[in-house]
Length: 172
Image: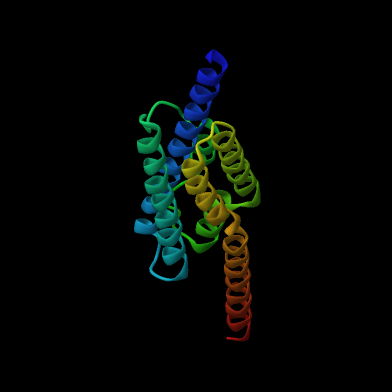
């Protein structure tokens, strides 16, 4: 039984780490949505913050089912990514780069891996309702590719606008 308790404790610590990462990302994206100029990027930041808040809500359900606390661990990987980001990026190019850093492929792989591991652990512990909730969160994480494509498109539009503006200035 001691191994079962160790596995459960490790699982809870893993969930707490995931929760911390979601909280840090939600806070950073909320701050960025406040400072971004109105438009597509501001809506993107707001939408992404809402996704992380929804995931936190689902993880809180998990913690209630497991009768444990959501706080206790620190997601050092997410925190290090967010620490290198200026939420007050003033120009569009910086804002797009920040969004790519917070929604990029590497971070997406990290999140999907964390949630996949959590689903497997929940199933191994016989926590099928918990596994179902975490799997729902995992499915939302897998849709991150559309976010990346949106940001790349925004960056391409920005470059086209800059080129057009440059050419207009040359003609004038």
